[in-house]
Image (cartoon, rainbow, N blue to C red; front, side):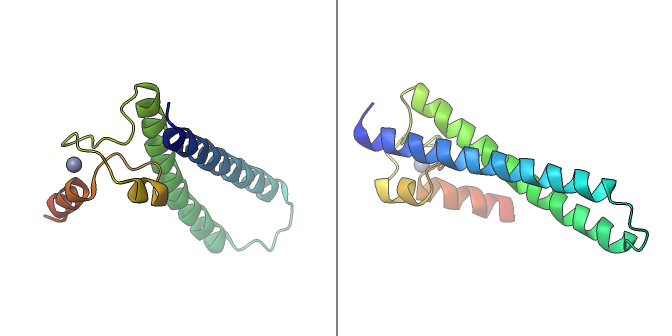
Length: 116
Ligand SMILES: [Zn+2]
């Protein structure tokens, strides 16, 4: 493994750990909230909070998936190459987003496709 890939692997592992820690903190918060016996809890607000949390968790699990994907590609020796066209992804892009598996051209095409 070259120095750059090693560096990206460390970044990915760090990012993964941060997300996991954050999810754990959220869980603790929910548990504490449920155990509180204050009867002036605003139910509607609480529901809103949970909904917001759910959306964030979805984003986090997406990010976790992307990180795992990238880590898998490191293990397979394919990290840094576009999943779509096989071209090398510029180091600058990977530094900004270590979990990127598409080059900018393919990413833009994918987004245009998604937009309709
Ligand atoms: Zn590409």
